[in-house]
Amino acid sequence: MQHKAISIRPFIGAANFNISRSFYCDLGFEESVISHNMSYFNTGGFGFYLQDAYVKDWVDNTMVFLEVDDVNRHYAELRALDLPGKYERVRLTPVKHLDWGSECFLHDPSGILWHFGEFKK
Image (cartoon, rainbow, N blue to C red; front, side):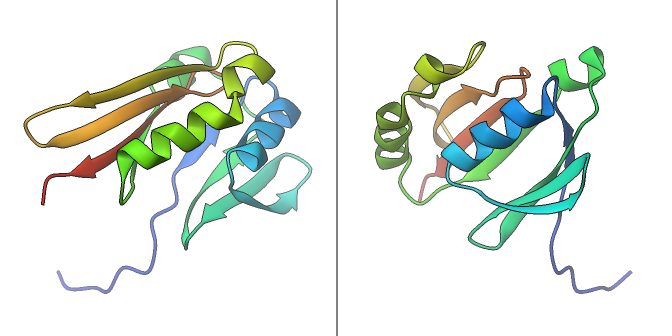
């Protein structure tokens, strides 16, 4: 099969849609409202759909990996935002250095685990 992919846009849920919308805007994503219960968030041409839908098992098992050019700088910028101080349930984990590269972790207000990583060059 041959095709030219244009984008990939996962759907993620939110325990509290408005709090999650605010969180992702604070995180630096640009919001495009699609309807009263769905928005598209993007940064640098990459994005995802946030839904006003919450299934605990689904959200608790959702992980998103966003590759960044400099994970240490990205972690410093995340710390400066103080998202754990602003949003309940948000947790930020420092950078870990692994065989394949480095990454830090951020749990959103619903519990979705974001990996921000940089591959070894």
